[in-house]
Image (tube, rainbow, N blue to C red; front, side, top):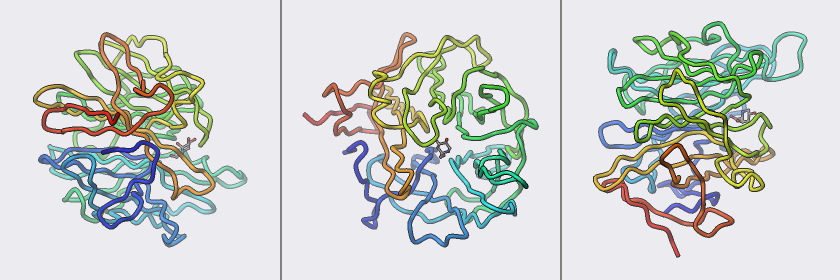
Length: 315
Ligand code: DGJ
């Protein structure tokens, strides 16, 4: 069972450290990558952790697959956030994208570099090796998201502050670059996530309120290129998305039904290691998408059969 926004233990009995994360399915196993904020991390590192599961409920810690020891050699303050791993069928490699950021001379903010970093590995949960960092398509990029379309095409979603919106950008053939922007949506949204459901694209994201929760919003379109609809609230706005921020939309296609899971982070900015995960099945279809807990005021305990796709709610 999944108990939203509560401590979630891994196979070692430790709180899962995969914040700002996403999940890929490799040969029937789910791999969850995210920011590892463990308090005992070496302070000179910003590691990315990997967990594996067959059922999305029980997670085995596979290790800190990227150590993140200031790989871009940024002077001053720096950090790595929101890692996303793509499996490149053309090269067989696993390619990790991450938001890498830091100070630039003469400025106090830790978010001035606004780049993505790339690291690669031959296996999904091996040691990822640093490749480089850059601004995708020459643009500032902060919180990133990942989308893999039903045809296998991979996209990076990145927020571009100077343009007041975000891009949905196709990766290059070998996934080591961002090839082109297929859509720019002029809406101040970060932590972008996309799912294709019943022939329609649903794009979700959070507003720009830093670590503090807000009413996350979604838009729809028949094509990734757009035109995209107006943005609407995912949940009753007064709940501030039940205190969470979007990070990924996971589609589980089962034998009986397809379930789309909202994956959000419940950040604790002053104690990031204690940040939680708010995962909950969405009501989706006909252009509407809603995070609507059964109990009315907070998402309760639920579980899922990944084979059938069926969800059960705890009464
Ligand atoms: C910066 C954003 O403003 C926060 O909301 C949060 O997403 C962090 N990045 C962590 O990725």
